[in-house]
Image 1 (spheres, rainbow, N blue to C red):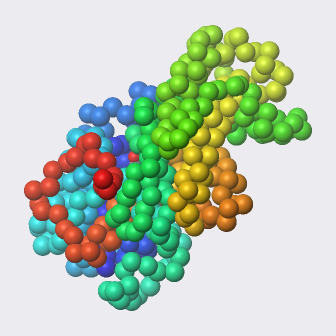
Image 2: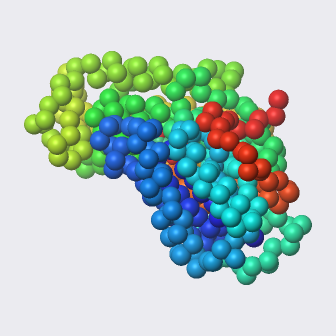
Amino acid sequence: MLVLGIESSCDETGAAIVQDGRYLRSNIVASQIEIHNRYGGVVPEVASRQQLSTIIPTLETALDKAGCGWSDIDAIAATYGPGLAGSLLVGLTVGKALALARNLPFIGINHLEAHIYANWLRKDEAAPPDNALAAADWTYQDGDPIFPLICLVISGAHSELALLRDHGQYELLGRTRDDAAGEAFDKVSRILGLGYPGGPAIQQAAQRAEEALLQLKKPVALARSAYRLPRAWLRGTYDFSFSGLKTAMLHLAEGVVNSQQNSGAAGNGEGKQISQYTRMGAQAAQYGAPNVDLLASSFQEAIVDVLAVKTRLAAQEYHVKQVLLAGGVAANLSLRARLEQELLPLRIHLRYPPIDLCTDNAAMIAGAAFFHLCRGEQSGLDLDVHPGLSLPFRK
Ligand code: KG4
Ligand code: ZN
């Protein structure tokens, strides 16, 4: 089954063609990062206008790259939430209109569920011949994730720990009580003058700090503990809270003097405001790395610490054999390595999608759609956008 997926929930326009929920025939993402970087975050009105101008060329490229004509496509899927209303509306409307015009089945997909299903995608494996998959075999193929499993869904607006007993069966174990993990990365990146999106910028700064220490033949752990930052453990729950950490970072940055002249520390290119942590100069010299990089490393460690420990505890309590990471923050290398370290002694296997399939893309939309379509599910063409949609947890 070939599904054409469309993603337009925020600032990425995606179109992809995926076979049997797993094999990528094409996956095109038009990013608006350059445009929003100027404002330090996504401007919704700009995002939806941009979606409008890129969606058709993106779709055409996806069909082209897959070597597909319309007659090859079996169904169309588009994100209907959560996300920015204006952006969602573009992809959903185009998806429904194409389904109507081509007389194809249509299904609206929950963006968060799609992030989870990115773990079923196989990037570098050639697709088997069409129709090789027996109808009864759609639930499992060798190499798929194995239920029951724990999934940590961490994106720009969500941080949820879920137990998945089977396809479509979600139990909520914990969620953030304030900021999402990605949101914390983005806000702290802005505080540190490192730009948008914050996750990759902070990860890079942390890597610079660690490399500087390595050159001095000092352990990298020194960078991660250079600043003592709070961790909200919220013991006895699987909930998260990152707002205290964000406030601590703000207080640490109180001594900031914004300076155009001081370059190097933030490494953010020309013409951008660069933050200089004046009060911490002495400490920076001691560690041989710019303060902003040490701060980034300590901050990343504080987030990773809580996410990894809580996920490991949940995996132990529910006796699962596999843990999945999903959402943009799943691209974080430090989190992947730390969680692997936590799970290895327990013989629990950690899985995560390739980096470019962690952040927003349409392949995951087409992938998730396959499993719904196989259950005989479709959406009506009256389906509207749901900006505040959450995962369909069982009560
Ligand atoms: O899933 P996603 O692409 O969009 C949403 O659905 O929200 O996630 C975007 C979030 C942003 O907050 C971004 O800073 C974060 O994912 N992110 C990362 C990394 N790459 C993206 N966070 C930490 N480390 C990364 N390498
Ligand atoms: Zn996303």
